[in-house]
Image (cartoon, rainbow, N blue to C red; front, top):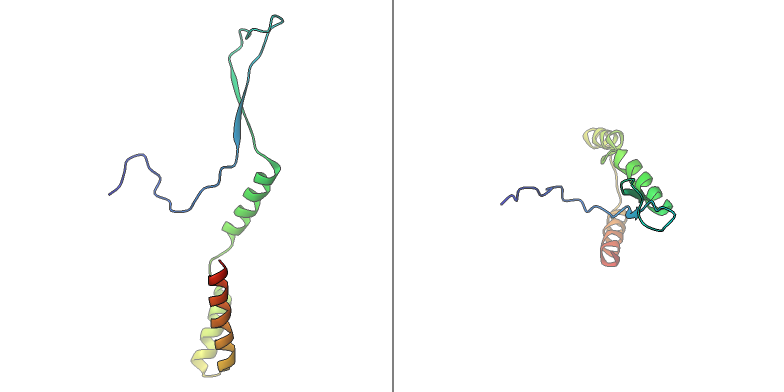
Length: 100
């Protein structure tokens, strides 16, 4: 059931900034006539994270050239893989899943 006003994008969003408020003050320490301004400061770590995230998002999910190359070798009947390679890949994937 959709809820109005909720973003339905399933990806988690990191908190990238902290807002700070600065007040202009007169010589007596009270706020001056200028309106209050909000200033956003993004840490260098968060900026680097955002830059890397954008680079990753720009990459395709599938290496199409590799998929096409494998499809051609399979269709030609020249794709050969050893059972040991398949077993090793299965073990590695399961070890990674257990650690993650």
